[in-house]
Image (cartoon, rainbow, N blue to C red; front, top):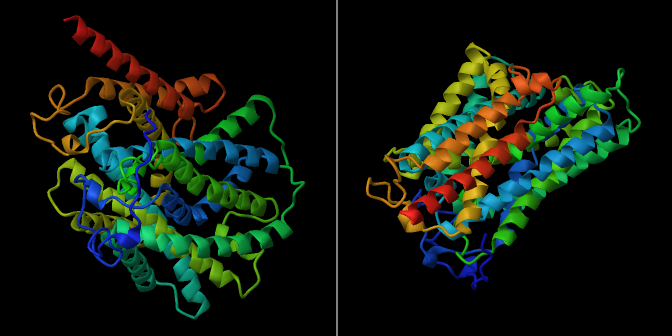
Length: 479
């Protein structure tokens, strides 16, 4: 990968209010961002990633690790290792300034124009919409609980109105887009961090640091549980296959290492701290109901503040998800402005949320299925990293936006064989090594349930992609 010398950045204050303004709806979608509209510094990415990742889901994951039978220190080891995979997300974000386009367009270089539509439809849109529904459902439950404290009865209308209000707040941020996200998330990250720090102080003071499970794990069983825990924790940073979406406005000479550093720190610091707080809480109280469990640590006056921060954090997280899923619909081929594709995604997500909360609680099934999402996301990340290495992070943004048959990235019938073969083989290998509640692959079963889906899903497609593209190049040069 190329670490080109940095060029002089343009401070946001020198730009006109029409360019990436927080008070105007972003006009760019998957099109190329010209150099005249690039601005900011890599360090601005820290808050963009920290704000949505100071969230309740991380606390729940931390508690889950304890339920799996790990000790407090084993859980901490799993949390640290799982969050280390954020480095990959950070490196991938480095392709944004180089290309000036979002990840959903950059991946055309890996799969071809048509092949990328399949990739984006599944990894960029379907999985994102499912996450929208799951997070909105969780936030709605918290909101209904808060309203109950005020004497508002919990019924269908309360649930529906709460879900719509939370979704509407999310959509406002997503529709306004990149400019608002970049400005809003910096103070938001500070506020959420302070609230979570206060919550952490109360939890730490009541935690049982010497906690040990009733039946301590050992040997293969311990290895299996720790491997499963690492896959669970790593699934969060690996889900951001679209991290270039939020770095593409940076000047084209921004160093990859700078983008990777600030993106990684924005993911790792809140990821480790919030997840470990969940484990600490589970060492002392029953976290079957996470909200109720945490409230046992919190003073009566602080509990509502914390629960409101949970809702706000979910909105921040889902706003980024909805933003990227709107870009994904454009990359799939839907000819609508980004603001409208975002609203379309929001409508689908709200429908799924209301259906889940009011009619049929299918979110448990969806959540279980998403545990298998890492078997798709890890191979996609593996191919992405390999392509960045192969091209030395040199992407022709204007050429990538051309999706016609005669375009440079049409390849063979719209498919790039190297990317398609590598990702499909990677997904198959990752599935074989996966061990979840809904599926256990044959390799994982033969290894007594040890889940190696993440490392296998990353390494095999990474290596295979490089082998195929290099072989193809040698074949062409020999003709």
